[in-house]
Amino acid sequence: ARMRRIAVRAQPIGDGRTAVVCADTGRRRDAERMRREFVTNVSHELKTPVGAIMLLAETIDDAGDDVEMIRHFAGRIGTEAKRLDGLVRRLIELGRMQDDGAREQRLVDVRDVVAGAIADTDVAAAVRHTDVRMRDDAAGVPLTVAVDAGGMRTAVKNLVENAIHYSPEHASVTVAVDAVDGAARIRVVDHGVGIPPALQQRIFERFYRVDPARSRLTGGTGLGLSIARHHILANGGKMDVWSKPGEGSTFTVVMPLASQAPPTRTRSLEDD
Ligand code: ADP
Image 1 (cartoon, rainbow, N blue to C red):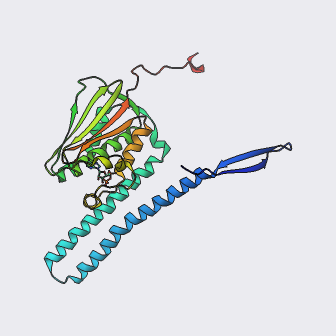
Image 2: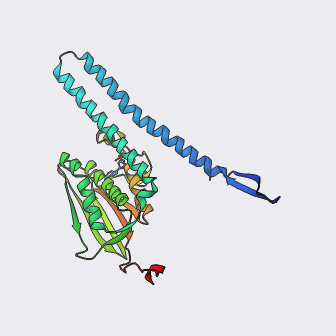
Image 3: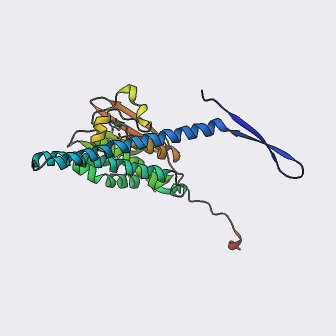
């Protein structure tokens, strides 16, 4: 259990009165420790590809005119640069996550969110020759939710990106939408490597990767799912995973449907 430290301090508030101020310093220390751990993790993740790129550049420098060797090392520099690029993108997503302005909620149909997310992954899909498709299982029924649409789009995009990266080339990924029990449901279905049962909850932790070597090749950071889950929870939704190694994975997002009634207008002075 977490240790709680309460700092108590007396503070004069005028009229000869004194207020007693209690601060939960244990909580503050937890936050500080988490921030420190985060910075250490990010620094480590940055250091590895930067170090590799420097070493590879030196090796190319020493390669003389061995074209094959130069090509090989140039390719590896590309892989490491991709990893750096992935990390920087995720850090930008994390930064946006903390930006309150971006969290403004509006009414959107989850189909639009899903279509946007699929569009965002077109390059990754093309590179791996993956067919990503939306399947509408709600036939014309509105699937309106009140959400921060940008955050939701990022969340679904991260799930689709994973589905592409953890499937073989030429695979197919389906994003099915429907309604269940007054909620909109989004299921991202792949037929990829799957996730061992014991690790299915750990994958939502920041920087956690089942297979760091594989994740590295795809520019993985271990941040995608924690960012996705954050956005889903922040919008009042839930996220779940079903997976079987060798068969594939399904990530399910459930968001409460917004009531279809138009917003009630409150009377103001301007009405008179
Ligand atoms: P990464 O950038 O490494 O993909 P994520 O946070 O998105 O980071 O995912 C964490 C880990 O969860 C991945 O490294 C991978 O091991 C596992 N994972 C996520 N999605 C899938 C999936 N669709 N199929 C198999 N494994 C997955």
